[in-house]
Image (cartoon, rainbow, N blue to C red; front, side, top):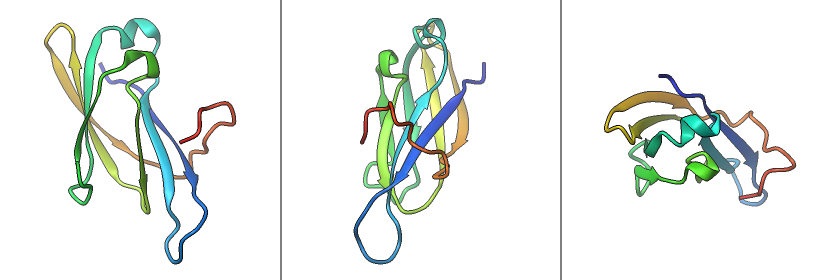
Length: 105
């Protein structure tokens, strides 16, 4: 089953040169789908100090937060509680605005 992965991003103030962004990636599915997931392994580009990161909280949609200067592809490996797994790719899009009601980064 292909999950709906989404993200928010916002430009940060300060610095000279390239604009820096805060971003949040999460799984946007109903609770019964999230409850079937054990964890998500997000694989970021090798330029990150820790390119492989695990999110294990269904209550927050398996959120992953970070900072960056350019968009990139994320590989999400979904580990289900029934011991199956699937992998899908997601493009982090800095044009997707951070909603006013979301907790800020």
